[in-house]
Image 1 (tube, rainbow, N blue to C red):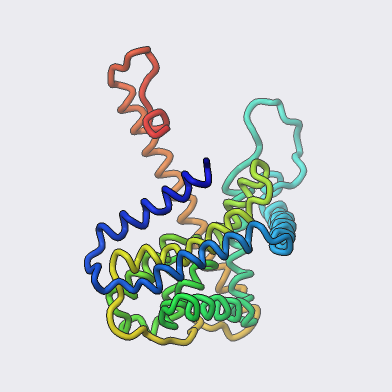
Image 2 (cartoon, one colour):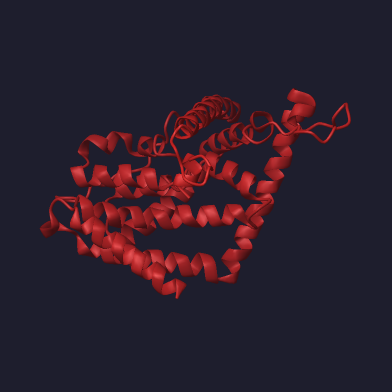
Length: 302
């Protein structure tokens, strides 16, 4: 029953995207059909093949190694706030776990590591391989395929930089694909952060998030083509790494600085958003509610 419910919801999403499309007569149905089939193929490959399941288990072990390495750095800099042994006994009230010092610093490590892998040309090679799969199976242009593949690993701000020289040549439909794929994916730094937080609750959390990010890439292309169909010949393009570093240490330094900016943004947004939710709950608490229990955003949104 759950499978049929999922299939029905999938079809409804496609129908909704088609119904709000701006030019249904020029929809490239080859991209739509091949994109749907590619999602099914990726789902079977990533979820049912034992070899890929073993690969994701290895990735989860790698995540734990990254967490231990990050904690070694935070413990050295922040002491017990960063994970070092506590100089006092806990009273049992509250917790010594500080999110900004224990969980979020992994953003710095992943950002620096990603920059280093780009300098060593390992990550660009992986992006090229994935982009060729999208280009040959779905028939999208090289520039769109590269940006879509990059979104599996980086965020929507960084991914278009890989095809920056070709952005002015993209059609309106192709530019819409680039933007939609950016919002459908998740940056590698945040992916690892989410997995480290969900790891104690969900087994193989990194594998689940990575699979969702990979399958979302062709799904975003399908939705984009249904809503704003590309017109004209597909735009070709080659990968252009943004701001190439001059050495491995330079790559690590640049990645750390970029990660620091992201870390500060995450901390600031968490403070502001939680404050706004608390303020909204206080305002909702003034409304009369039968039963005596005050209204909150959490109750309204389930």
